Length: 114
Image (cartoon, rainbow, N blue to C red; front, top):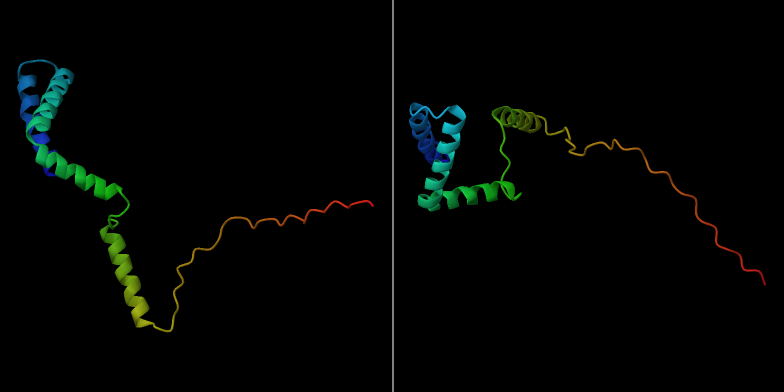
């Protein structure tokens, strides 16, 4: 997050400068983006490495899932209902929706003629 903010803080003034120089919107954005990238790549290695480590952790499959406020609220409501009614069993199995497999008949063994 910090690295993105640094790059944005570099991009915006450069974009305004290039727009003020009347380079056109597309060319101003392109030049500002390239210069902001180069400056952040050269001078902000520590922040870039931290951002890379954060992204690697998030997409590695080991990170805790991010839950929305609604999901947390639903989970808390379910937990309170389960705690209030201990005689009710909650199964977490998902019913099978695929068609049952057809059993194939056993294959015949070839007979040996004497």
